[in-house]
Length: 323
Ligand code: EAX
Image 1 (cartoon, helix red, strand yellow):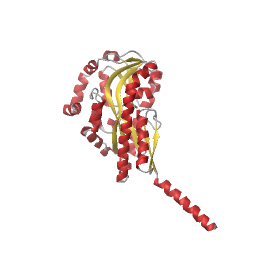
Image 2 (tube, protein in one colour):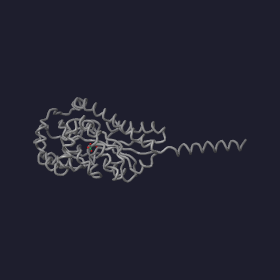
Image 3 (cartoon, rainbow, N blue to C red):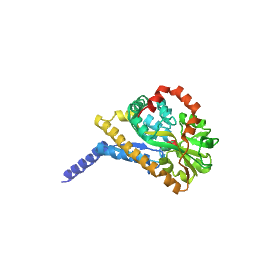
Image 4 (spheres, protein in one colour):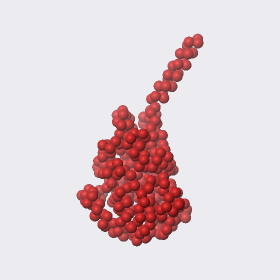
């Protein structure tokens, strides 16, 4: 009697150990709040990975830069101290220089064009460039078209940007271009931006409506101009070793989960873009909706000539020519 009870207890305990061992937990992070286009991306990814692996893989989600800014989380993924990150391409060129070309201002006509490029052969080839740097790039997603905000004045033309001190991403293409606008550029990690705006360390910043809303920049910025000066892609990155350790079917599960995450993310960007102006106006922002884009493009003539030299005109044209 006693022995059989002991046996039952033991086998139960062993069963529990076996269940625990069969579940692997991985981390994924974003630099913005959970209630955002990026939160939706990683929440969907986590749910889909669990579903598609029968619960053998559990994805722990971290928001608002709680594991560090985008650059730090990409570094952590490269080192393997964190398995996954979802990031804009802002800091990506520091790891994969080929990705720089995607952040050229006024490269994409609209979201449909950007999505077609990323989902087409150019984007899919680019995902392969991450392999030799210690990453598995699971899928492209989206941060969105970036717009300028500041606390000083309404921006109607590039002349209005001259002398504004603005936070930029840690991205060499952005920094070069924004200098072309006459902006005083201050590269900074995203988690520091709200405080920098609040304390007046910088006058402004630029980000998609999705980010401006989720970060509540309306509380610290008066003016918003829909410049749409650059399209900001986003990406699901995984540590290469962690991905390679997965069984073939699980690899597929992770890839498909990332695609589902990207789908949900793009849908949220679309709805944020549709509601953003009214929402931010209702919170007191002064919004300039119609800027003369040709003037902004014109201000970058010299910078664009440099980009053509640096990246190859043919490569830039190949992106522009995608229908
Ligand atoms: O990924 O750093 C930035 O401005 C990014 O757009 C933001 O963190 C969202």
